[in-house]
Image (cartoon, rainbow, N blue to C red; front, side, top):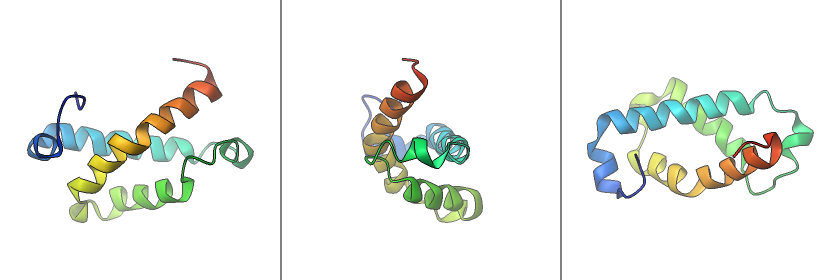
Length: 91
């Protein structure tokens, strides 16, 4: 898993990196199906940034910087998980 790793370890594990990128792509696609009024309930999530990064994952995958993926996993995923738990009710 990603927990307990640092950027260098994450960067050197191609399978983990690819899995994280795919996971982020799936989250982005799922977020497109959320109604805008649901998204407005959480201002801690930058929905536009998520859309933009999803486009990079889909169309410019060759230019993805591992530092950006690492930053998203470390800083943005906890807020997304919290949003999902509050919205859907699963922990």
